[in-house]
Length: 309
Image: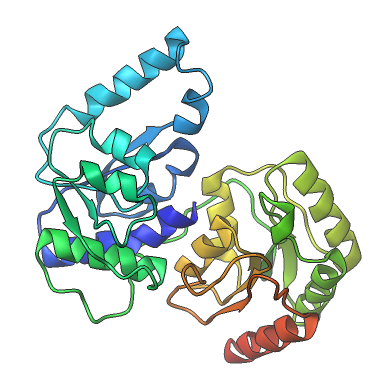
């Protein structure tokens, strides 16, 4: 999900530089709601590769893949831009009718993928993910890299669930245990938000994550919503006046809406995929550098003061 969010400003750049450009977006099905939030995206093409690869020889899988391939070949594209730089993205990029363009051998995540591009562009690997996407698009579509700040171009949708009154979103769950931050620290953050007049809303996505969210909510007087779709979770994030989250896609999405956001990194270097957005942001921690409660509280107090909370 984070990769999808990081690609949004490149779309805004393309449309500003090339008025009248039509942008279609091929995306993993669970995250299709995100590009649909960008008014400049004409057509969103969901693909369920994570699901399909487990049952490639089943008739229903082959039928679904054939249908997607037909959609990709419906029109002739002037450019098929691979912003992810993986063999799986190349596999599907090659299904479209048009020249496949991507990163050069020295700047791509999976170098073998670069073999399949019609044209390549070198983009320094030490740049933040948002800037890498923007530079790649500018290089291949022939416009100067904008000097302006990234414009994500999305507004929060209206969801089916909301909390009454001012709220903050806490995102304490992640796909891997190495990313987790201690629950007692989340409770302390939640209590600080309560003291600021914000109801903590605990975001979760699986049964185990729900149990974790409920324990934290019990300790700080927070609220645990029912299971929410990506669209409904986006609405919760768009309503939040403050976000504190782990290194997950939803933390990046909340920051893209402009909410003050603190990202907690427990096993990953934030420099290449740190929190980015139009509002105040902070990325704390890194490999072997689990952020202390004091560091997170200091960043939180700074953001709350800026917002006048």
